[in-house]
Image 1 (cartoon, rainbow, N blue to C red):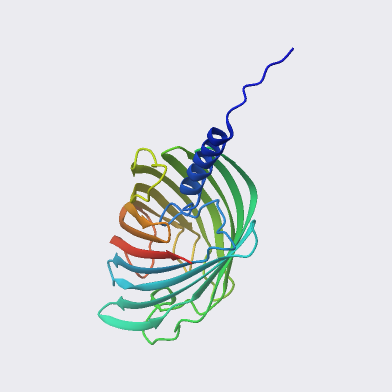
Image 2 (cartoon, rainbow, N blue to C red):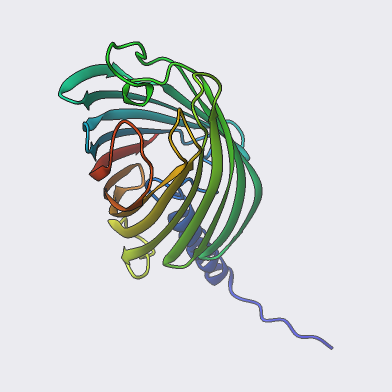
Length: 280
Protein backbone atom coordinates (compact mmCIF):
# COMPACT_ATOMS: atom_id res chain seq x y z
CA UNK A 1 0.00 0.00 0.00
CA UNK A 2 1.42 3.36 -0.96
CA UNK A 3 0.76 6.66 0.79
CA UNK A 4 0.62 10.21 -0.55
CA UNK A 5 1.17 13.52 1.18
CA UNK A 6 -1.60 15.86 0.08
CA UNK A 7 -1.00 19.54 0.64
CA UNK A 8 -3.87 21.97 1.17
CA UNK A 9 -4.73 23.80 -2.04
CA UNK A 10 -3.47 27.16 -0.70
CA UNK A 11 -0.08 25.64 0.15
CA UNK A 12 0.16 23.95 -3.25
CA UNK A 13 -0.52 27.19 -5.11
CA UNK A 14 1.98 29.09 -2.95
CA UNK A 15 4.70 26.49 -3.60
CA UNK A 16 3.99 26.53 -7.34
CA UNK A 17 4.12 30.32 -7.35
CA UNK A 18 7.53 30.31 -5.61
CA UNK A 19 8.96 27.89 -8.18
CA UNK A 20 7.62 29.94 -11.10
CA UNK A 21 9.00 33.13 -9.58
CA UNK A 22 12.46 31.61 -9.20
CA UNK A 23 12.41 30.37 -12.78
CA UNK A 24 11.32 33.76 -14.10
CA UNK A 25 13.91 35.73 -12.15
CA UNK A 26 16.70 33.31 -12.88
CA UNK A 27 16.26 32.48 -16.53
CA UNK A 28 14.75 35.59 -18.05
CA UNK A 29 18.02 37.63 -18.23
CA UNK A 30 20.11 34.85 -19.81
CA UNK A 31 22.34 36.94 -22.11
CA UNK A 32 24.84 37.07 -19.32
CA UNK A 33 28.38 37.74 -20.43
CA UNK A 34 29.51 40.85 -22.24
CA UNK A 35 31.68 39.74 -25.20
CA UNK A 36 31.32 35.95 -25.36
CA UNK A 37 28.25 34.51 -27.07
CA UNK A 38 25.61 32.72 -24.98
CA UNK A 39 23.90 29.40 -25.57
CA UNK A 40 20.50 30.89 -24.78
CA UNK A 41 18.05 32.26 -27.36
CA UNK A 42 16.07 35.49 -26.90
CA UNK A 43 12.34 34.97 -26.42
CA UNK A 44 10.18 35.89 -29.44
CA UNK A 45 8.15 38.06 -27.06
CA UNK A 46 11.16 40.01 -25.70
CA UNK A 47 13.35 41.57 -28.42
CA UNK A 48 16.46 43.41 -27.21
CA UNK A 49 18.24 46.59 -28.15
CA UNK A 50 21.81 47.43 -27.07
CA UNK A 51 23.65 50.73 -27.31
CA UNK A 52 27.34 50.15 -26.69
CA UNK A 53 30.09 52.75 -26.49
CA UNK A 54 33.58 51.33 -26.89
CA UNK A 55 37.25 52.22 -27.02
CA UNK A 56 40.14 50.10 -28.30
CA UNK A 57 43.70 51.38 -28.00
CA UNK A 58 46.41 50.38 -30.47
CA UNK A 59 50.00 51.38 -31.12
CA UNK A 60 49.31 53.03 -34.49
CA UNK A 61 45.85 54.44 -33.82
CA UNK A 62 42.87 54.11 -31.49
CA UNK A 63 39.30 53.22 -32.42
CA UNK A 64 36.25 54.47 -30.52
CA UNK A 65 32.55 54.91 -31.15
CA UNK A 66 29.29 53.09 -30.56
CA UNK A 67 27.46 50.00 -31.74
CA UNK A 68 23.72 49.61 -32.20
CA UNK A 69 22.72 45.99 -31.64
CA UNK A 70 19.25 44.51 -32.16
CA UNK A 71 18.34 40.91 -31.24
CA UNK A 72 15.08 39.17 -32.13
CA UNK A 73 13.80 35.71 -31.23
CA UNK A 74 12.34 34.22 -34.40
CA UNK A 75 11.11 31.09 -32.59
CA UNK A 76 11.91 29.54 -29.22
CA UNK A 77 14.95 27.90 -30.88
CA UNK A 78 16.03 30.57 -33.39
CA UNK A 79 17.49 34.04 -32.95
CA UNK A 80 18.66 36.84 -35.25
CA UNK A 81 21.10 39.61 -34.29
CA UNK A 82 22.11 42.68 -36.33
CA UNK A 83 24.83 45.12 -35.29
CA UNK A 84 26.08 48.34 -36.89
CA UNK A 85 29.14 50.22 -35.57
CA UNK A 86 29.54 53.98 -35.94
CA UNK A 87 33.12 54.75 -35.07
CA UNK A 88 36.18 56.94 -35.39
CA UNK A 89 39.33 55.14 -36.52
CA UNK A 90 42.74 56.75 -36.17
CA UNK A 91 45.82 55.60 -38.06
CA UNK A 92 49.25 57.27 -37.92
CA UNK A 93 47.76 60.68 -37.15
CA UNK A 94 44.91 60.46 -39.66
CA UNK A 95 41.32 60.13 -38.43
CA UNK A 96 38.27 58.69 -40.23
CA UNK A 97 34.69 58.70 -38.96
CA UNK A 98 31.70 56.76 -40.29
CA UNK A 99 29.76 53.52 -40.17
CA UNK A 100 31.57 50.20 -40.16
CA UNK A 101 30.62 46.86 -41.65
CA UNK A 102 27.13 45.54 -40.84
CA UNK A 103 27.25 42.38 -38.69
CA UNK A 104 24.55 39.69 -38.90
CA UNK A 105 24.28 36.55 -36.75
CA UNK A 106 21.80 33.67 -36.77
CA UNK A 107 21.74 31.32 -33.75
CA UNK A 108 19.91 28.01 -33.39
CA UNK A 109 19.45 26.21 -30.08
CA UNK A 110 20.50 22.56 -30.33
CA UNK A 111 19.88 21.63 -26.70
CA UNK A 112 18.26 23.28 -23.72
CA UNK A 113 17.67 21.69 -20.33
CA UNK A 114 16.43 23.88 -17.49
CA UNK A 115 15.85 23.03 -13.86
CA UNK A 116 15.32 25.05 -10.71
CA UNK A 117 18.37 27.34 -10.52
CA UNK A 118 20.23 25.33 -13.19
CA UNK A 119 20.49 25.30 -16.98
CA UNK A 120 22.50 23.66 -19.77
CA UNK A 121 22.33 25.18 -23.26
CA UNK A 122 24.12 24.35 -26.51
CA UNK A 123 23.75 26.37 -29.72
CA UNK A 124 25.06 26.66 -33.27
CA UNK A 125 25.57 30.01 -34.95
CA UNK A 126 26.28 31.37 -38.41
CA UNK A 127 27.52 34.93 -38.71
CA UNK A 128 29.08 37.35 -41.14
CA UNK A 129 29.55 40.95 -42.17
CA UNK A 130 28.51 43.04 -45.16
CA UNK A 131 30.93 45.68 -46.54
CA UNK A 132 29.00 48.82 -45.58
CA UNK A 133 32.00 50.74 -44.20
CA UNK A 134 34.39 52.88 -46.22
CA UNK A 135 37.34 50.78 -47.42
CA UNK A 136 39.16 52.91 -50.03
CA UNK A 137 40.73 55.71 -47.97
CA UNK A 138 44.12 56.66 -49.43
CA UNK A 139 47.22 55.76 -47.46
CA UNK A 140 45.50 53.21 -45.23
CA UNK A 141 45.96 49.42 -45.24
CA UNK A 142 42.77 47.36 -45.29
CA UNK A 143 42.84 46.51 -41.59
CA UNK A 144 42.95 50.25 -40.74
CA UNK A 145 39.90 51.17 -42.84
CA UNK A 146 36.40 51.70 -41.43
CA UNK A 147 35.33 48.55 -43.29
CA UNK A 148 37.11 45.56 -44.83
CA UNK A 149 35.66 46.06 -48.29
CA UNK A 150 34.57 42.43 -48.58
CA UNK A 151 31.91 40.18 -47.01
CA UNK A 152 32.85 37.76 -44.25
CA UNK A 153 31.22 34.43 -43.43
CA UNK A 154 31.66 32.35 -40.29
CA UNK A 155 30.22 29.72 -37.99
CA UNK A 156 30.61 28.63 -34.38
CA UNK A 157 29.35 26.66 -31.39
CA UNK A 158 28.37 27.92 -27.94
CA UNK A 159 27.85 26.05 -24.68
CA UNK A 160 26.50 27.70 -21.51
CA UNK A 161 25.87 26.25 -18.06
CA UNK A 162 24.17 27.82 -15.03
CA UNK A 163 24.36 26.56 -11.45
CA UNK A 164 22.67 28.89 -8.98
CA UNK A 165 24.92 31.98 -8.67
CA UNK A 166 27.62 30.57 -10.98
CA UNK A 167 27.53 30.71 -14.78
CA UNK A 168 29.98 29.66 -17.49
CA UNK A 169 30.01 29.98 -21.26
CA UNK A 170 32.41 28.82 -23.97
CA UNK A 171 32.39 29.91 -27.63
CA UNK A 172 34.47 28.60 -30.52
CA UNK A 173 34.22 29.79 -34.10
CA UNK A 174 35.86 30.93 -37.31
CA UNK A 175 35.18 33.82 -39.70
CA UNK A 176 36.61 34.07 -43.21
CA UNK A 177 36.80 37.17 -45.45
CA UNK A 178 35.65 36.25 -48.95
CA UNK A 179 37.96 38.62 -50.82
CA UNK A 180 40.90 41.03 -50.57
CA UNK A 181 43.28 38.08 -49.84
CA UNK A 182 42.67 38.62 -46.12
CA UNK A 183 43.25 35.80 -43.65
CA UNK A 184 40.48 34.18 -41.64
CA UNK A 185 40.21 34.50 -37.86
CA UNK A 186 39.46 31.71 -35.38
CA UNK A 187 38.26 32.54 -31.89
CA UNK A 188 37.98 30.83 -28.53
CA UNK A 189 36.18 32.81 -25.83
CA UNK A 190 35.57 31.73 -22.25
CA UNK A 191 33.37 33.54 -19.71
CA UNK A 192 32.62 33.07 -16.03
CA UNK A 193 30.26 35.25 -14.08
CA UNK A 194 28.94 35.28 -10.54
CA UNK A 195 25.82 36.86 -9.10
CA UNK A 196 27.19 39.16 -6.41
CA UNK A 197 23.79 40.25 -5.17
CA UNK A 198 21.18 39.24 -4.19
CA UNK A 199 22.25 35.98 -2.55
CA UNK A 200 18.67 34.77 -2.97
CA UNK A 201 15.82 36.36 -4.87
CA UNK A 202 13.00 37.60 -2.62
CA UNK A 203 9.57 36.21 -3.41
CA UNK A 204 7.54 39.37 -3.71
CA UNK A 205 9.79 42.30 -4.69
CA UNK A 206 12.03 43.45 -7.54
CA UNK A 207 15.67 43.87 -6.51
CA UNK A 208 18.73 45.16 -8.32
CA UNK A 209 20.88 42.27 -9.52
CA UNK A 210 24.66 42.73 -9.82
CA UNK A 211 26.97 40.24 -11.53
CA UNK A 212 30.73 40.13 -11.78
CA UNK A 213 32.09 38.86 -15.11
CA UNK A 214 35.54 37.64 -16.18
CA UNK A 215 36.19 36.71 -19.81
CA UNK A 216 39.20 35.37 -21.69
CA UNK A 217 38.97 36.43 -25.35
CA UNK A 218 41.41 34.94 -27.86
CA UNK A 219 41.77 34.98 -31.62
CA UNK A 220 44.17 33.38 -34.08
CA UNK A 221 44.61 34.98 -37.49
CA UNK A 222 46.24 33.12 -40.36
CA UNK A 223 49.20 34.34 -42.46
CA UNK A 224 48.28 37.50 -44.35
CA UNK A 225 50.07 39.55 -47.02
CA UNK A 226 53.56 38.44 -46.08
CA UNK A 227 52.92 38.48 -42.34
CA UNK A 228 53.01 35.38 -40.16
CA UNK A 229 50.02 34.03 -38.34
CA UNK A 230 49.48 35.56 -34.92
CA UNK A 231 47.33 35.59 -31.82
CA UNK A 232 45.59 38.17 -29.62
CA UNK A 233 44.47 37.36 -26.08
CA UNK A 234 42.51 39.76 -23.86
CA UNK A 235 41.36 39.49 -20.26
CA UNK A 236 38.01 41.25 -19.89
CA UNK A 237 36.73 41.84 -16.34
CA UNK A 238 33.39 43.60 -16.00
CA UNK A 239 30.18 44.25 -14.11
CA UNK A 240 26.53 43.85 -15.04
CA UNK A 241 23.77 45.70 -13.24
CA UNK A 242 20.06 44.90 -13.64
CA UNK A 243 18.03 47.82 -12.21
CA UNK A 244 14.90 46.14 -13.60
CA UNK A 245 13.90 43.16 -15.74
CA UNK A 246 13.82 45.37 -18.85
CA UNK A 247 17.08 47.28 -18.35
CA UNK A 248 20.68 46.13 -18.04
CA UNK A 249 23.91 48.11 -17.73
CA UNK A 250 27.31 46.62 -18.56
CA UNK A 251 30.84 47.93 -18.16
CA UNK A 252 34.06 46.10 -18.92
CA UNK A 253 37.76 46.55 -19.62
CA UNK A 254 39.87 44.89 -22.32
CA UNK A 255 43.37 44.12 -21.10
CA UNK A 256 45.84 42.59 -23.60
CA UNK A 257 47.69 39.74 -21.92
CA UNK A 258 49.36 38.07 -24.94
CA UNK A 259 49.85 39.09 -28.56
CA UNK A 260 52.00 37.91 -31.42
CA UNK A 261 49.86 39.37 -34.21
CA UNK A 262 51.78 41.77 -36.43
CA UNK A 263 49.37 43.84 -38.48
CA UNK A 264 49.25 47.54 -39.46
CA UNK A 265 47.52 48.54 -36.21
CA UNK A 266 50.51 47.46 -34.10
CA UNK A 267 50.31 46.24 -30.52
CA UNK A 268 46.91 46.43 -28.91
CA UNK A 269 46.52 48.48 -25.76
CA UNK A 270 43.83 48.92 -23.13
CA UNK A 271 40.22 49.13 -24.22
CA UNK A 272 36.75 48.88 -22.77
CA UNK A 273 33.04 49.43 -23.25
CA UNK A 274 29.86 50.64 -21.58
CA UNK A 275 26.54 49.18 -22.69
CA UNK A 276 22.89 49.87 -22.01
CA UNK A 277 20.52 47.02 -22.94
CA UNK A 278 16.74 47.26 -23.12
CA UNK A 279 14.13 44.50 -23.36
CA UNK A 280 10.77 45.22 -24.95
